[in-house]
Amino acid sequence: MHPATSVLDRSKVRRSRSHVVVATLAVALAAAARPAPAANWETPAAGPSTSGGPEVLFTFDDGPATKTTAQILDTLAAHDISAIFFMVAWRFDKGGEGAIAKHRAMLRRVLDEGHVVANHTMTHAQLCKGKPEVAEHEIVHARVVLEREAGLPVPWFRAPYGAYCNRLVQQVEDAGIRHVYWDIDPQEWKNNNAKATEKYVIGKLKKLTGRAVILMHDTKSATAKALPKILDWMATENAARAKAGKPTIKVVGATQWARELVGEDVIAEAHALADDALEALAAGLASALP
Image (cartoon, rainbow, N blue to C red; front, side, top):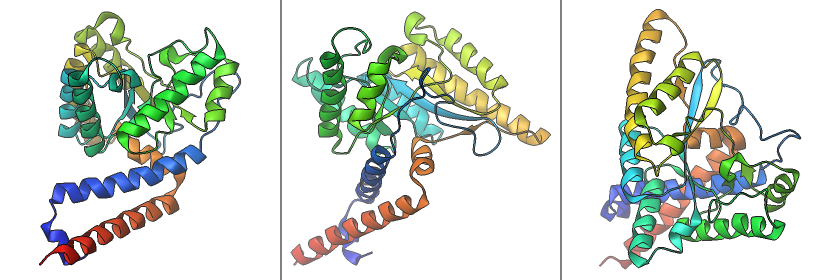
């Protein structure tokens, strides 16, 4: 890399490279989108286990929320986990300038820390009820808003309530996006009970044999409180399993799943593009220096 990059903030360099890679992945993922099967959204939601043992992918719906999303990001960072955040786009259009600014800052943090932003409609609408054009607007306009805010393509989508109908399947296919369902749902949005959430998720993980997508909500205090407990339990459980020679519970990061979907050739191309972009930036800085 050009010596002029030494004048750049190292964290900004890493973020810039990451954003270029994520953008390339997003384009490839949109091309790889596929319709759901005839009965319901696809399960296992992220496909079969690639390790042969239990695997989990963490996803969070309905945010971003200033306090609880920040707490969840802190926990994920402490455990080096990359997740998918399915955001409702009204948070970037309504609520006043102060609230919008806070939501924008939280979205930037989500991206800067290596997570993926995904589409959860404009207003968390039930997409299989009402007029088709309303559902289409909820999906398409939310994508426009989220891509505007993220500065990246947003090809992953989750229907609120897990709504499923033939009309919605066709709308998702027409939009060229990929629906991401779930396998473990503690429904903490109903009771906001951290202990019940922790108990439910751990109970499911104890019995897990393949891959599962966990659905939680970064707008709920129960999620923010339960997540560290769940991850601490996983660390203790994995240590015991490793000692006993049993398969550990592996975390599949959002970017890891993207790699599986698009293939290593696309990943290599994304990294090359990122290196070229940073090289061009460094060269530009060097030419501007006295």
